[in-house]
Amino acid sequence: MKLKFTKMHGAGNDFIVVDAIHQDVSLNAEQWRRLADRRFGIGADQILVVERPVLDGCDFRYRIFNSDGGEVEQCGNGARAFARFVSDKGLSTERSIRVETMKGIIAPRLEDDGSVTVDMGAPRLDPAEVPFDSAGLGGWAEGEDTTWPLPVGGKTVFVSVVSMGNPHAVQVVDDVDTAPVEQTGPAIEAHARFPQRVNAGYMQVVDRHHIRLRVYERGAGETLACGTGACAAVVAGIRRGLLDSPVRVSARGGELSIAWNGAGQPVYLSGPAVTVFEGEVEI
Ligand SMILES: N[C@@H](CCC[C@H](N)C(=O)O)C(=O)O
Image 1 (cartoon, rainbow, N blue to C red):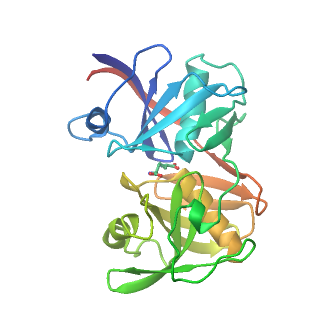
Image 2: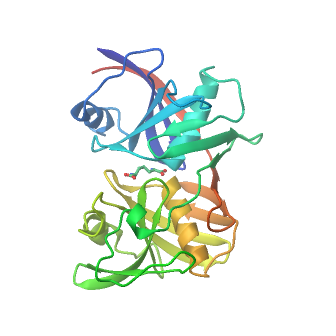
């Protein structure tokens, strides 16, 4: 079977985007994994699938597969690539669209300067919703900032847990360049307190409106940028009293911008969405 695809990236977080409205795309986890493989396939951190919506009031349905083949709830950089793709392909003529995901509706908007801003919805802060198993670690109350101790590699790190539809554990580090991302990322991702695994963020606060960030992504390893990771880090930083909105997020692959007005409010993620090439692959 031949599959038409577009290779895209958002701040270096790279994607294979496929139109499942005009071609049959019913692949299994092994086939997604093969497509994402950087040596035996096209190569990507995630695969994004454009489908017709199921819910009333939405323009599209957006499905996301990590490079390990697993389907996940949300992808922020991917949401920008998704909006650029449906516009470039003439699947939508609107500048703002409503997109159904596994965990709620998001709303990307194409900006005049070529960037894309996405209303990612409100973060969920209750550990049970992340999900994070806080048994035996004390209580949690809405409006209170809590960091949780996590034993990792013989040390204890303190993480904020945030759901942007997908789970994040964010820790503050002195310097992202020397942070032990490769060493501790896999252990945090698979930590028993996160029953659905987790994306592990390492945030360096530069000033109240600027952070540097690296993310060891669930199901993909360290990526050059993570959109939901940037949202989660800024939410955690604001709740910890370290940051004020808006916040510039410097990732290894580029710059993102995050705005958030506090609990119950949506998080806005802005940044680039770039097409690299198009092709057809035998799968
Ligand atoms: N790169 C993404 C997040 C993709 C999903 C993540 N790895 C997960 O498993 O939750 C982003 O830009 O948000």
